[in-house]
Image (cartoon, rainbow, N blue to C red; front, side):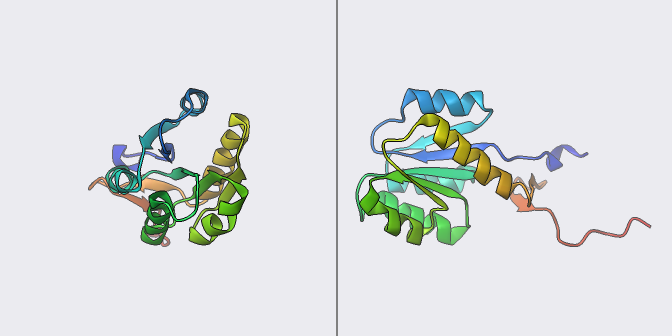
Amino acid sequence: MKPWMELQLNTILILVADKVPIELLRALNQDGYQVWVATNGAEALDRYRSFRPDLIIVDVPRLGTSRMAAMRLIYEAAPTPIIALGSAEAEIESLDTGAAHFITKPVAVSEIQARVRALLRRASSKPRYITPQGQRTFWPRTRPSLW
């Protein structure tokens, strides 16, 4: 296998208000994920464009925040799996905005880990590879004939 074809499904972007609970960062790192953190919508969009994460976790403290707008823009750009965390009143807007999963807070770190594994398992049915130009792409639908 060529070096540029290395399977890459391990980057997570977390969008939070202040700081990510250390238990969550530690757990995701121990599970083998590279984690990036953003504290506002503009920073999240910038990190998304720079790193193209495989999954996004968004802390949605209330409706209509810049995080909700960032989540909508990211989902419209490319349907990256999104897990939203927040209060019950933010659930419907989060799911309509593009979140694949919504978890009502408070939440156990183990539940977030399980949802991350489930979403990445689904995404891995269409493995993405790094091209020589450094772009992530899905495996081509048609493959050249081997004979």
